[in-house]
Image (cartoon, rainbow, N blue to C red; front, top):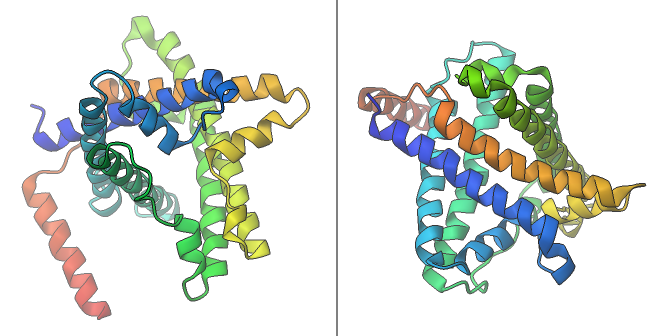
Amino acid sequence: MTNTFEFLARWGYAARGVVYITLGLIALIGSSSGEEASTHGALSNLLGQPFGRFLLATVAIGLVGHVLWRLAQALLNADRQENNAKGYLARAGNLASAVINGTLALAAARLVLASGDRSGEGKSPVAWLMQQPFGRFLVGAAGAVIIAAGAVQAWRGISGAYRKRLSLPSDKRNLLGGVSVFGLAARGLVLSITGGFVLFAAVVVDSGQAGSVPEALDWVRNLPTGTYLYALAAAGLIAFGLYSFIEARYRSIDAPEQADVKRGVAKAASAVDRLS
């Protein structure tokens, strides 16, 4: 029986899918009109649709569910990762995903409450991190982690490792599998390029050099035959959005029970007490 946590997790995957499909469509057809292919641009675009406020609020709630699921994967080991370097790295990636999607959920909520006003946007996470003690090294480490996360995601698609937690119907396996591989590979590439910009920002000690999706896509477009590669990357982001819907429907989710959550909170509180 599906519990509330599993429902939120699946809702979260679907919400992520809406964001990435919108992002990919903006990149494909919106660049000529000057519309920025960024996650914030995708959220703003959703707000401008019929019933946009309701749609964006639904996405925001779903993203909160996705954050909770990522925290369960990272802190409660909901995916039952092994206690080795590979397992800890996977859980660290889930924790990073929780932070990223948390900022996305917050941005969506702000847009809903502020009627699309962008004045509430604060400084970028990279700019904030750069101002902290040892900020340059923290930003460099973040860039390296993002590059690695992108490479791992692309590898999961190309190697077929993504199938480990998916139960695809046999009559749709080839189609859904192809979409999954393409989406994971493309999003992994864009993520690694973005991490490269963050790493470069650390080297030159300038947070303004830290790019995101628009800069990554522009970099691809400036390559030889870049126009075609850009279109391929944008289509890949749409495929990643579809892959998110595939996960929402077919992913194995071992959702924690209330007792598991209480134990996890108690362990976290105990760890904080030992550090303080």
